[in-house]
Image (cartoon, rainbow, N blue to C red; front, top):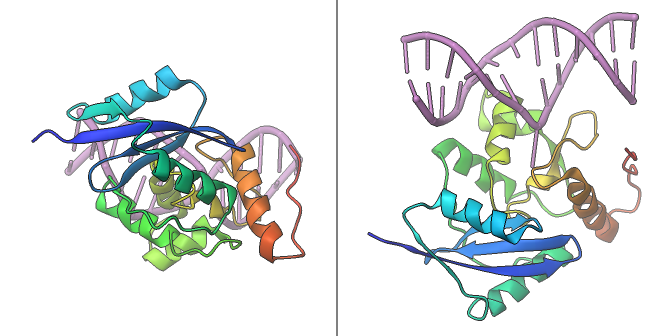
Length: 177
DNA sequence: GAATTGTCACCAG
DNA sequence: CTGGTGACAATTC
């Protein structure tokens, strides 16, 4: 059966983003500026689906998402439609339990999941296509340094800085690179 | 800091 | 089943 994916473009202080929703929930929230490329990627990801742009219909959703980006910790209360292997989904669900302003490292995360290796966690997280709402940016390396980020580690650093700015006073300033 | 190596579950083919 | 693969971690110049 043919499913429909609606998408729209949004802007935030972190850059432009693409939001995509199935009829079940959000399937993607990706940063990027090259719209044709991103749209194509979306179509490639859902080759069977009917991909339609509905900028107007999604305006409310866009507003909620934008706020979630600008105000870390704000939960727009939108359903997510996570697509991935069972392992990935498990990781993503756990990510969503990390409170704003806190960080974990891949190793601890792996331990909580069982005996799995830290690198499996990274693999799963890296496959997450819903930025911010699945706070993949709250996972950093064990030594405290910020590791890679799917949408550029500048964004990751900015997101972390904001979250920590709101609640936690002392904080190790991120190293400049 | 930067470069090097160990290591291992996951998943596509 | 097998092999390639890391958004790591620990160790070493």
